[in-house]
Image (cartoon, rainbow, N blue to C red):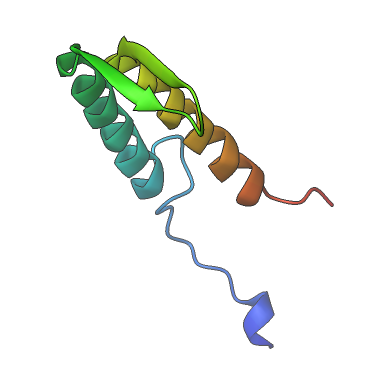
Length: 79
């Protein structure tokens, strides 16, 4: 029997709430709290122009850009 044929009968990490998903859910909750408590206006330089906006909006935009980039880089290939 080759190592590829061996299956484990344990169910760790096979359900809806795997350890990785729980960690991601906790991180997302912390990011949302961090964004919500930073509400003051800031000036941000975007290459040449300066933009004044609430800090929570800039943080939310960076979070969403990070989600999109992470989803693109780490997506699983379909067979």
